[in-house]
Length: 307
Image 1 (cartoon, rainbow, N blue to C red):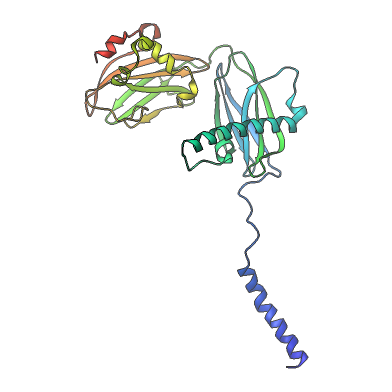
Image 2 (image 1 turned 90 degrees about the vertical axis):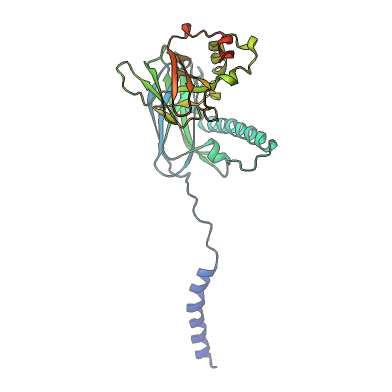
């Protein structure tokens, strides 16, 4: 084969093999489904009351970001120390995650959520910060996080809010049991359903209450408040809640058992406490009473014992 023919063969091989090699060679690592560059966070304070603040967060592009709230500290300006502030916050959140993950590992849990999905937010978020003190200034803030490097990115977004001295919410609760479902309705003074209000709902079987030390319980209302000592242990709900006969206690209603459902608005403290007592008959219930005045719900422990 002469030199000219050899050159033609070489060029032909390149034209055929090069595109083929592009198909066979693994491509560069695909672009992550999140970004840290040129990400802007929109933060809107929707509602502020005595014990909670409702906020909306969103980003202009897909990104992981951290949101938080903490009491404002006089004499310290986070905006003047953005990098330091964001790093300290991120360290603290990561420490909480590691403690949570460590406890799960020790209990034998295999499937544990990564830091990003457990501690960060993604996309648009409507969030209630609860457990706030009345008449107190707080910082609400957000910033982008690189979930792989575990570092903050971009600038700090921060707003200062002040909670009200008293709750701005005026609600009470309606409760209905129909078929195999419970329905909770937080409603305002004219009967309209309040769709954006944090509240607690817990249902207990009276037979379970009987297993509690009678000296520790005394009265049912004291026991209820004891359960509500730590709001994080109870589920904060919004709007109408419908649950298929498990009463939030993980067990199906049992025929001829008596149950107590306790409802309370949560606005820094528990308000509008309501107790419903009913007996499950198998496909319906006999509703005994409801009382929205906590002072009148002193139920002696022996009454529960005799159920």
